[in-house]
Length: 197
Image (cartoon, rainbow, N blue to C red; front, top):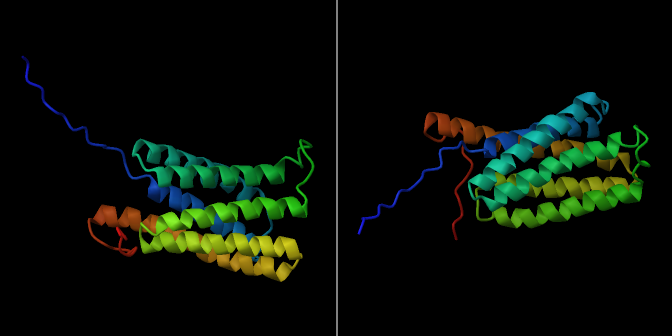
């Protein structure tokens, strides 16, 4: 009888979370600079939404699947396609492919994403404090955007813009913490303890 040897194959792929978080965060900051009233909605934001917020997050999510991280797969691929769908909502009417989304349609769209984000927030309660802040602030952002669209109050939309900048910055911070803490082999940017209870 031939003896068998168990071989453990180590996953040598890089951590995709910093890529996904930075792609989400930087794109969120740029869109919300527009929502806050500082810039126009231009190809700069749409291009960022397609290529970084969209495609880079989907790539990060696929790598998370390889790492057997269901939360990372679900979050990054979902928000990647959120950005792609949002650009589609804005661009398809310009191309004559569909009617522009009504105010009520946008309320429904943003509401369902807010509910989805709120559900994912509960997953972060088993993760670190930085991710908890990202998902809590994103839930609030969707709520403000829904309120702004439902009420037609431009002031609420501007408030959502400022809150969205904070949300995006928190995602960039968390992503950069993942990069710098790994590179230096110690905590450079703290993200809070992992709650394993």
